[in-house]
Structures are given as structure tokens and as C-alpha cells.
Amino acid sequence: MNIKDKNLYYIGGVVRDEILGKPSFDTDLTYRGNAIDFAKTIPDIEILQINEPFGTVRIKSGGKEFDIASTRTETYPRKGHLPEVDKIGCSLKEDVMRRDFTINALAKSTLTGEIIDYTNGLEDIKNKTLRILYDTSFIDDPTRIVRRLKFAVRFGFDSDEHTRKLQNDYLDNINYDMSYKRLKKELVETFNLNKREAFEKFIKQRIYKLVAPVDFTLPEYDFENLIKMNLSNISQSNIWIIYVGLLPDISNLPLTKAENKIIEEFKKLKSTIFNNDFEICKAFNAAPIESVIMYSTVNHKTAEKYLTKLKNIKLTLNGKDLQNLGIAPNAKYRECFDYILKTKIPNPQMTKADELKLAKEFFNLS
Ligand code: CTP
Image 1 (cartoon, protein in one colour):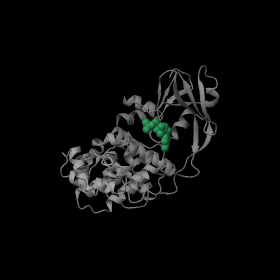
Image 2 (tube, rainbow, N blue to C red):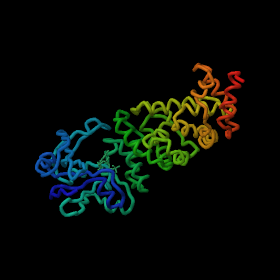
Image 3 (cartoon, protein in one colour):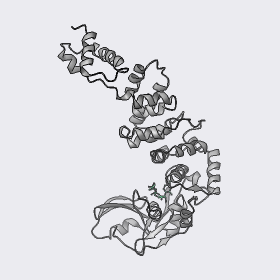
Image 4 (cartoon, helix red, strand yellow):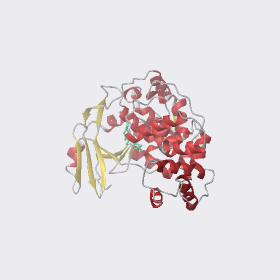
């Protein structure tokens, strides 16, 4: 980014990540004053979007997009929901103090490269500590409890005692009137990391209670590796639901159609008794792979057997081959395929010619 100004600072994650030597997902900037007015004075940039109430502006410069926020103070008239802007153009210190953790409260001057550290964030990075900035932070924004978990797992950091106490206090007294859209966003980012450690902390520290006031114990089976082994068939953005979807009630979370289907199919598998490999194959072939991995917490041997062996047993014969035998498409096709699959499961080396023979046998053709 080549825009430099004495009032323009890199802020939040980008500064933290640079110090940690990690790649950053986005580049946040804050302007001490009004960012929208400032953006209008920058030559050779394109203004893409202005959000007047929040004092933010999205610009394109040198082919890249950046968000510039005005320094602002905020209040939370409705706890657990989006804050309201109190004052735009406040001091940098005031802007920093409304944020979540000291490690996310560092600013870096675009002009001099100086790091401005009002909250001892640098020391906390060195000591791998997540420290909340003010005592009512989790009450204002409980999604920060999940953010804490996300950063703990991502960076291997731990919380200071006071932050942990504030988290426990909040979890003893959760206000369920919160923005579940925001909570979901943080859950997605945390669990898409695919770390058993995150799930263990989520359960052991009772963070899952934010989703619903239910009881839940950590499933014994660790499916982190099962996910890794099947990554080519799982959408990266669906990993989170394999974990969080195991909770007995996630109806507060706004789910997509695909996420709902994963949960429904898992429940179906869970309530089915399988008598043989053919039944497993039929049921699991019809379910999303994410549901199958969830099922590993019910019976990991069955899930593993399916994923490593049964899933790969596929018929080479198709409808066209049956038509070539002179059989017009009809409901019997499915029965025929099942008949062949039943034979092929214990004999996976079967060739297409073997399958064709079985099809002829099924339709009584010589
Ligand atoms: N922030 C906050 N409270 C939240 C979300 C964000 O105080 N609930 C502040 C933090 O200072 C954070 C910044 O806004 O650094 C930007 O938020 P976001 O982009 O979500 O997080 P990053 O810290 O950039 O982390 P990531 O690398 O996960 O994007």
C-alpha cells in the first residue's frame, strides 16, 4: 500500500500478523479523523463503497482493495448486537480502546512505520497472552469469546487470568439475545481450522453454551484426521458444521441449505441400524460426506470402513448399458443396480463384463 499520511494507520490484525510473521487475511486501516473526507483527497484511487454511519470507505489503489475506517468510539445499546457509532474522528487511543484484545489493538503509522501500543499489546504478543481491553467487553460482544478461542488455537496463545474469569462470568450468565449471524461467522472461522484442540476447548470451557443452553460432552472419537484424509471431497467452508453440528441444538444459528442438509442426513444416519455393508453403502452414498464424518462419533469403525473401502466400490455399468441390452428404462433398473452392488461389495475386483453378466441374470436374459 503506497498511501502515506501522518493520520493514517494500519490497525488490528494486519499489525499483529506482521509482528507474528504470519500472512494477513486483509489490510485494515484507520484514519485519525474522517476517513471518507480523507479518501476523497487521495489522488489516483477509486472509491468503491462508502458507509456513512460507520465512517468507513473501501478504496482501490494499485489494483488492491483496502478498507479505511475513521477513528470512532462505539456503544452497545443492545448488548450482543452490532454497536452504534458514538463519535467519528476521535483520538487513536479512544479508537483502540473499543477493540477486543490487546494483540488486536496495535496501530502502525503508514508514514513512519512506528508502532503505537497503548495497551501493552507487544508485550502480550511476546508472552503469547490474550488479554481483554475492558471488563464489559464480553457482555457487549459475546462473539469475542469465540474470537478468543480462534486466536488461542491459531497462534497457540493463552488468556490471562482476568480475561478467563470474565469469560467464565459471562458463560454463567449468558444473554441469549445476541446476533447469531455474527456468532456464526466466528464459529465458522474457528472450526474451519479443523483443530480437535478448538473443539476440546469449546466444550471444556463451556463456550458451546453460547449457541444454546444445552449440555454436551466431548465425543471420544477424534475425527480431525478423518477430515484431513477426505479434504479433497469436503468443501473447506463446511468443516465447521461437522464440529458445531454435533451440538444437540443449533437452531439459533442461521444455516444455509447445504448446512441444514448435512445435519439432517447425519441425524438420519444416526437413527438407522445397519445390518450389512450393502445397507451402509446405500445410506452413506446418499449422504454428504460431512454427515458421514459426523457419524464417526456414533460408530467410528463403520464410518472409517465406508470412507476407506466401501465408498470406492462403484458400479461401472450404467443405464445406457442396460438399454443396450434391450431393456427400456424402468423402475427395475434401480433393483438391478442394487443386485449387482450387493454382489460387488464382497467382490470389488469384479469387471464390467461380470456386472453385465449379473444384469442379464437379473433380467432373465440368456
Ligand atoms: N474487532 C473487535 N471486536 C470484534 C471484531 C473485531 O474489537 N468482535 C476489532 C479488532 O481490533 C480486530 C479488528 O476489529 O483486529 C478487525 O476485525 P477482523 O477483521 O474480524 O479480525 P482480525 O483481527 O483482522 O483477524 P483475522 O486475521 O481473523 O481477520
